[in-house]
Length: 183
Image (cartoon, rainbow, N blue to C red; front, top):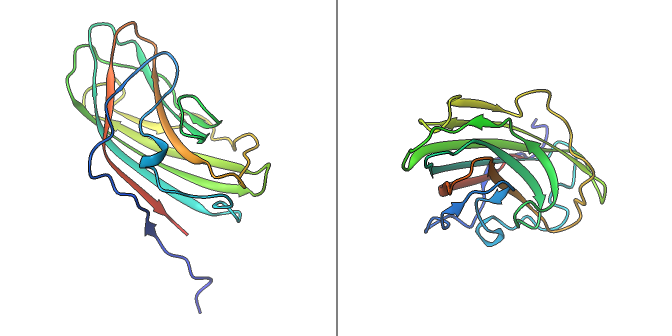
């Protein structure tokens, strides 16, 4: 006997055209819009243990003084630096003068508690071709922590964002996105 009807389900919409490149800044910048992310709706995280996996593949271009960069993950409207921070990546040194270097990010978001003051846990990893000195990053780099209170009854999204500390105009673009309901 099965312990429940659990399955993996790739969610729509699928990207047919990549989102526009995002010019990075010293504040977190959303790598895709809310309309490019699957509709989760209110109460999506309706039970502890409910999980969703997000895999992004894209390119980053740096210029002369890129500084450091890090992924951040929010639960909110999908706007830049909006919502509850689920995970803050460790800033890694970006390599100067790179063009369209590839990167891949995979995160898993798990519901720990439900309701209007629910909590989520986010962890994963990022791989960069040449753009950062640490080509592979565990996210978060140190102790994983459960988020602050999230209104899991609201129709919010998981928003992957990136920020950089440099003084020039780096860009990132998502070329492929896969969002999978894990149970």
